[in-house]
Image 1 (cartoon, rainbow, N blue to C red):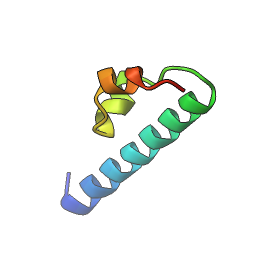
Image 2 (image 1 turned 180 degrees about the vertical axis):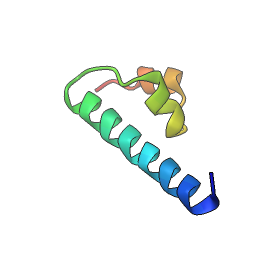
Image 3 (image 1 turned 90 degrees about the vertical axis):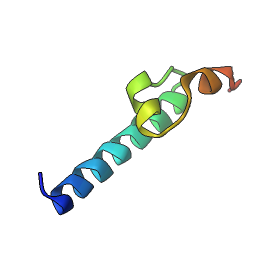
Length: 51
């Protein structure tokens, strides 16, 4: 994959992860581990947050 295509693929992947985590938090559900990893959020720390 060339550089611009790779950049846009990663950007879209990150936007999807942001959307998924935000929707999960708003709906009082646990977000996927994959989405947390994409955003660089340690799952253990996220789970320790009291919503």
